[in-house]
Image (cartoon, rainbow, N blue to C red; front, side, top):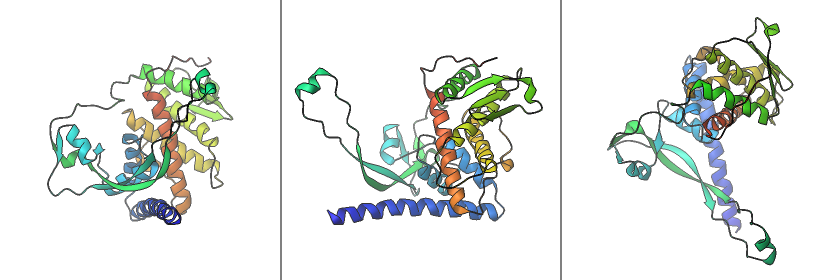
Length: 289
């Protein structure tokens, strides 16, 4: 039992070490005059928003141009095969134990029993391959956001804001700013173009969500503003909307711990927003005029 526990701790440590190495590489490349690596990392968050932060970082540092990844079996199921000589992208896959079903009792028969959760046993190294490393049957074009119209995006964002306890108002008194937010109240300039409204709302919604996030480090408003811009960059890239220039997205990198934490909260926050936008059951929301 003790041996198994040590092995699992070693596996978790290796995951953290791999992620930390990715953060160090990212910071080094930026300091070496390649600021575009940060924007590529953020674009990877948009493409792989269902992946963990660690795996997104590993994919973006090993193969920045990756657009769609899967293991050899996954590609085989799609009618494609790995090209000879291609090297896989190393990521970590969770090892989950099948939940044990509780024994039926008289009390259980009175109500539907809760679905038991799977137990995380640890992680294992796996290699995945980008679609560019494969050949075979053509894949269907587009992703889950390609057919999402702006008229659908805004109501879903408003619904997400409401579920987070945030209120949205339109007011021209905030000029020349296009949007502001403070203590759960988001104000937007009225009569903006639909794309502008969506982009500004994403940024201000992200800022309020970041304020509510539990952090390991004390962060200033300036840090949160930078992170909110990064979240907006991720989400707008997924929606194929124009974004703020990548060179304006400057997360702090002089402190590697803060850079790692910022990247992690940016990934998690953008994933929450993109998950809300991908739902089919979102009802139309209305902002307060």
